[in-house]
Amino acid sequence: MARMTEGFERNAFNYLLLLRLVPVFPFWAVNLASALLGMNTPPFVAATAIGIIPGTLAYAAIGDGLGLYFRAGSEAPLSEVFTPEMIALRVGLALIALLPIAIRWAMKRWHR
Image (cartoon, rainbow, N blue to C red; front, side, top):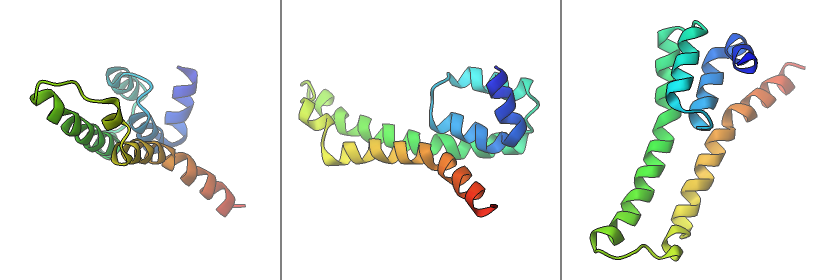
């Protein structure tokens, strides 16, 4: 909790965005921590929207691809889970999750 408090005090928007992009903690816990640590509503809504949309789109695309098999009443072959498109979606999610860290690193180098 101390680490979370420090992150919200330093830059609440970026910290919440990182927590949304890397869903390590349940959303209800992040929501509760944001409220208890005094985060304002506009940056909370913006960080939540930006942080949830990429993952939602990627998971929806993955589910849609696998849904073709389930609707046909068959099991999805493992090869479908590891198609280039599915791998690209997962890599894209990982890169988006690293974006706040990369921006923070670039800002530190820029202000030297």
